Every structure is written in C-alpha cells, then in structure tokens.
Length: 117
Image (cartoon, rainbow, N blue to C red; front, top):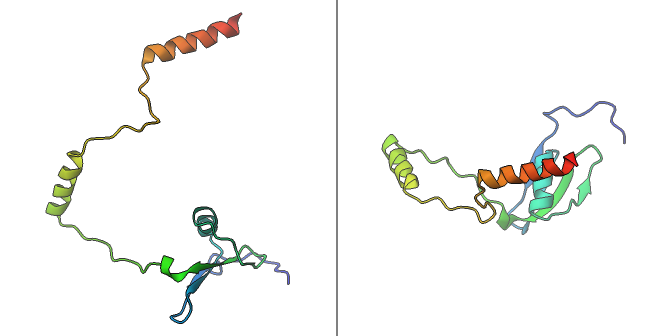
C-alpha cells in the first residue's frame, strides 16, 4: 500500500484506547515527540509501524492518568506562594563549581601563549 500525498496535520492523530476488561492500553500516534517519549523515557517498543510515520504501543493502563483540572489561585494565594519560594535557600548544583575570572584569564593566556610558539 503506497500513499502518494503526505498526511495532513488533521490526519496525524494520537489515539489512546483502553477498556475496563483488559489491563493494557493501546497508544497509536504520529506525533514524533510522543514517540520519543514512549520509546526513550518509558522504554516502550512499538508493536506496529504503519509505514507512514504512525506507531502503535502497548502500556499498562495503570500508567495512564486522567487529566487534572488546572489549579486556580487567588492573588493572595499567589503572593503567599511567591513569598514562600523566595524564602527557600537556593542550592548550588554539585556540577557547577564557582570559577574565578583570574583562573579563566590565566588559562586563556596559557592556551594563547602555546599557540604562538
């Protein structure tokens, strides 16, 4: 089966299908970001590739959560939350060591000096 015209964005759908009787859910998607997430982050392998960019996956339906309603905060609640966040001390990442400008300048001069010889 060959397709002469590319799929439109409306045709590139994502379908999540499950029922109460079976423990597994079926996800079919054309969306590359979903495919990357399902394969790289969740470790799933496609069970079917339709040849047009669509892939199908099986996943335990316990891992699918219903959507949540957005939390609506009043101006007062937002202000209290902002104050609470400002009061939390910032933690430095163990990978980011403080660098002094003098060290960086010496390293730059050393590299420059080596290339001049």
